Image 1: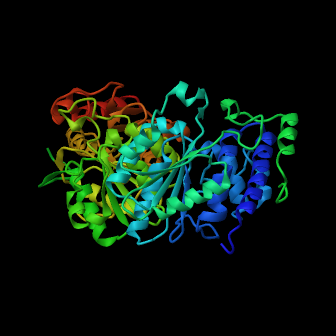
Image 2 (image 1 turned 180 degrees about the vertical axis):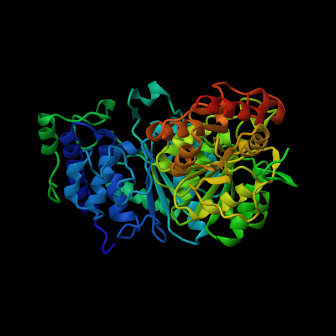
Image 3 (image 1 turned 135 degrees about the vertical axis):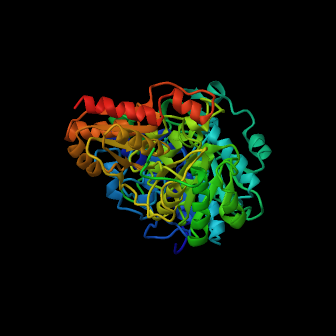
Length: 284
Length: 318
């Protein structure tokens, strides 16, 4: 990357990414806007500020930072950010979830979409994949960092905890795992469906260094904390970042409810949503 | 009895895997091994000892092992995962499906103690559905070699193949009747005995039973063609069709459920191309039980005598 965007510029990019998300989901009347909107700042901060990645895209990913999305259903935000950071043409966003598209409902490698290294959608698998990639970086004497994002509902999957135990035991300290802690899952609030109780204490008990971001939709706070997470790598412990976000963030009628987990806006709702989001980079 | 193949030594097929992996460790620096707390059973100890930095003990956490292996392909490694066949497939089917097969990852899933011949541990561990599960996955190659030498050769060969592979082998000591240092060609059936009355397609431990069956049939004046189907997917359909067009009937033999196994794949090939009588020697939709491998193979109908009886039925139906 040449010059890193300022915080203000990152916020402007976020507004455009949110427009992309609601337009993509509206166009096919399917997809997951809630979690995508909630993680917009995270993806923008990652791809426009933090990640040291190479282009053109190379599956092997040697000597560059890697990112894995474990909760694959929030594909709209990833696709938008990949396109906006130049992995593929933004026009391709219009093919999301359509027949013969590379932008599958959940991220996949089968169609060769640049930026994606493993399929995800069936939950609980991404952390294991990220740890494998991180261990190979160590074997290859590659100093770069591996990032992975998981959902909070996803913490209910047993494989997450197999991976958690493995990472600490093997001192995999070149990985930063973030949990999107929005408190919502398809059937309702996590506290009603299956409570995580003290998530921070759980990860600490599993041997991880845990940092928290109180508001993951506040770009200043998020960039500061991701930078801090990076500074904690290489010290013998894997890093876990619990990032509290609001599902549906940035659009008043979608924010803070599980109702918009997997529902597309209608024409009128789209217009209302777009009215709240400045077009900063030009719609696709 | 005058068998066309003979042996002087017996060994388990899993040792063929262990020795093949050790050789790969010495010749291919990208090969890494992962094991879920069964290093001794999988015969991965020598690889672990010689290449400790390329060996990953994952504990009793097979789902994590498959995910780790998928991740390790990113950065150029060729991961070989090792655990029992039951925990290599059924327990981790979704992880293999999404993170390995659908993602096109170059992971080698190496599975020991497959089938009834695991023996005394009983049905919880005797998986008989693994070939079916694995062959259904797009991109997956499925290999089930017959003896120590063939397993060693297959282990070495799959490292050169780009893409996910399921390699199935077993626990008991079995005759070593194929040549040492043989060339293993993925997807290429091996005609071991030429015959004209019936084609016997066998895989894994049942290949030796087929060799025994051929000798018994010869004493009855029946000429059986024995074909070693070490690769179940991709299936060598041409070899099957050429043989059956000559003999006019077939027998399949495998240590697996009748549903989903080699027999079913052969039936599929024959029905679409050249329908001929096919008799299947396989487990008839039941779980196994505790017992010695020999007792189990006899009780569940997977012995040379069962192949002979199936051959006679197939010939009768011509």
